[in-house]
Length: 75
Image 1: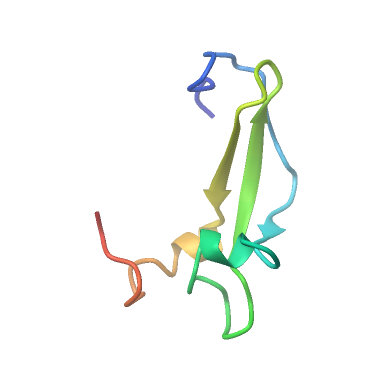
Image 2: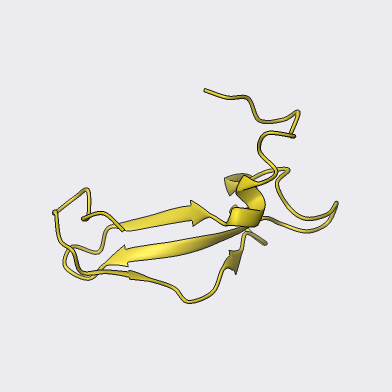
């Protein structure tokens, strides 16, 4: 993990499991990248212990669906 982009700290913590993007605005974070019709994609949160800056990374499973998706286009 690279240093925090906000404060350049190396004190970043990653949650040990992936979290589901279900409920609320969660499904809008990674639409159409879940494992099935009613499954949401998962992500991993990372937080900086010094400034509180948070980042969310799509899980490897969700990233694996990007290239085959008709809903996502390469930027």
